[in-house]
Length: 368
Image (cartoon, rainbow, N blue to C red):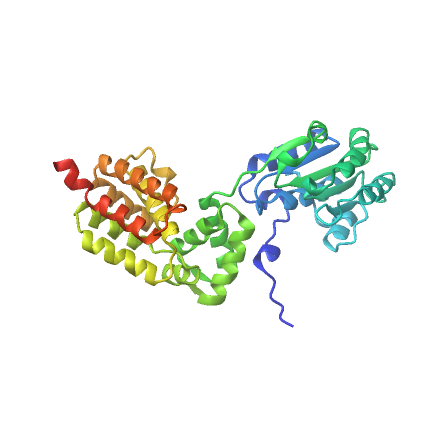
């Protein structure tokens, strides 16, 4: 069998300092350990793939480490740390509530909670996807969560906080995890690429980060897929080909042609995009996002809102300087109108083509 390990597992953070994009939460947990102000229950909530379960495991490991570093990190050498690394720790328990969501599963957990830890000061119970517990299971869990033994700490993780009953929420310290920013994801992917001996263009990694939509785990999975396709040279052209992403150049050309009232060229470009297998609604949404980015590039103060590579950012600035603000406002309104009408339209291609024709006539309307 192959020895390949997916990047999401191979480079999973092992300390608070290596967690991507959650510095404030990591610092809060470290300060709580340092000052010994520990709660009996924590709730980690946020989008998928942003580090909730990873932070729970790191927190659990640090809590039982017998030789903490000056930076409040686990030493990795004591018996508790070694047993955790070898998946044989009796003090850290994980329960997947998605597949263990019945009353009997929670009763079994409650019986286990009474047992004191063998090594270290705490028994930590990590319950993933806690919102999947049944109503009866929540009720059975409530009393233990309200008055647990002193050695027990619960860490609950969920992507859907609104599904958890208020009586559970009121007994937890709640930490809301952020979606990973594009820049944080690009920086992390760049460091992994160097370790793996992969030459990756910043624009290529930027596309991967945007495709991941705020999830670091998704970004790493896409990175593995792209490396399998590209080999050790990950270029922007190969990435958009593999991920079926529409090239920025199409949008830049469309906006320029619309400004210059080249209706025929606009329709031919749209036909080429459809011929390449792209969805018309995704195209019109992408065009709206492009126009928004051009608008953002008009002002130096809002330029940081543009989450693209430096080379692409320069092209946005150049197009912004040559495009009137009124054109951008009207174009954005037309794209939004098209998106809202798309689902109910019987001739979807014609709807998009009419929108593009109207975009190409905006400049002429302003002159008249």
